[in-house]
Amino acid sequence: MIKLEPGSVIGILGGGQLGRMLAMAAAQLGYHTHIYCPDEKNPAEQVTNRLSRSSYTDEVALIRFAKVVDVVTYEFENIPVETVELLNQHVPTFPSAQVLQVSQDRLHEKNFLNKIGVETAPYAAVMTEGEAVEALKIITYPAVLKTRRFGYDGKGQAIVKSPEELSAAWAMLNSSDIIIEGFIPFDMEISVLAARGQDGEIKCFDPAENIHKNHILDLSIAPARIAPHLRAQAVGIACHIVAELEYVGVLAVEFFVSSSDPVFRVNEIAPRVHNSGHWSIEACPTSQFEQHIRAICGLPLGDTSLYGRAEMKNLIGDDILDVALYLKDPDANFHHYGKTHARPGRKMGHVTRILPTVGTNKKSI
Ligand code: AMP
Image 1: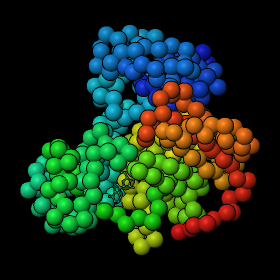
Image 2: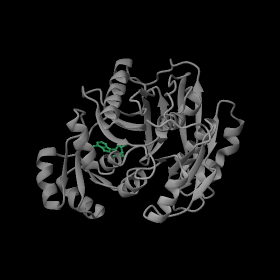
Image 3: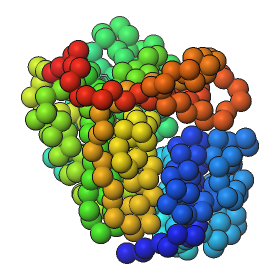
Image 4: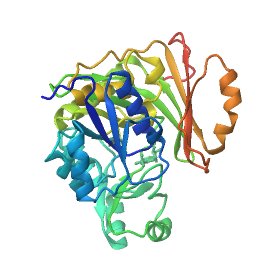
């Protein structure tokens, strides 16, 4: 187990808003950060002590980076596994390369979850349209076709409601690495942010209810408006996943919840801090970002209890133009990610509001 003293340097792969908020949490605990990312004008560089702008495959730059940091972590999961393996030869790197290997491929992820007894949608990996036709005889319609790798915010996926829709969906995805999932008629999507320390200590945040618009997270509400025993069930599954992975850091587990289905089905896991946990910055004594830094630096994990009911609204594209409105609202905790161009669909910031009681349940399962 490594325990880093304040003043140590945390290397972060990726320079997006998650890297930015990790760097801010690291500074709060007395650490320095060094962002490594290929992109220019990234949100994290405004708040970090040091920056390396190089590609994730530049071995010389990666080794140079590894030699000047005390630990490495990452803020997004599409970093090559080999990059994390190389870094780990020179400096402790959390979460591990094996975790990335599992979560980067939807097939590996579902195989792993089912192996440890966690339910998912029924699924099959297929390489040709003919194999898809055969698999759909078992999975049945409606179903969701997804590329196995590099999908996010609904990209790289298509719903097929009938055999007539299959060819168009297959052509649109244009890949031979496809996973077909049974369509889950969920009532709600929830997520649990789970943290595991190097010593095996585990703490979870309350499950959040997630509402999407155009496949992008719009609103997260914590705690999710489901019965307390269901919340406990979701937390139990998330704890089981991080324990089985021997994970270090914060990991997000996304679930489908359906009143007609007695089991919780995991949609996916993300080996990093997550958009659906941003409310924890104001709503909990320890935010998901601080918790991640604590875990990778060998500090005890912090308290994750909620001060009240939290609502986090993503500010997407032009939503950020309403900044004056949020600044006037005494209940709005406003976050701007420092991005200059508000393209449609781009996450520009978020606003969190804390309601003092947990009682206002408009919807409940
Ligand atoms: P994903 O990229 O896997 O997180 O999927 C994006 C969104 O598509 C999810 O948040 C769900 O709203 C929807 N979705 C994905 N897979 C399924 C499924 N098997 N059944 C129903 N809806 C799904």
